[in-house]
Length: 78
Image 1 (tube, rainbow, N blue to C red):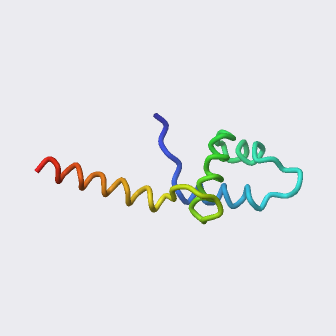
Image 2 (cartoon, rainbow, N blue to C red):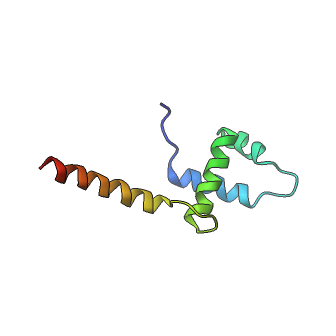
């Protein structure tokens, strides 16, 4: 499995993709940064969810849910 990109890198690429000039495609930006276009589209969707633009589970909610599940598993084992 490939190593994940650092969050700061993802945020920078998303910012560039959102602020792109007319005529510049997301695919071109993805190629410039060395990521797959579908990866960049996924990052853009997640950024919209995190900012509340689109419905869904934000990264902070996802992390909180993951921690809660770990605690539940630990408590069930006790």
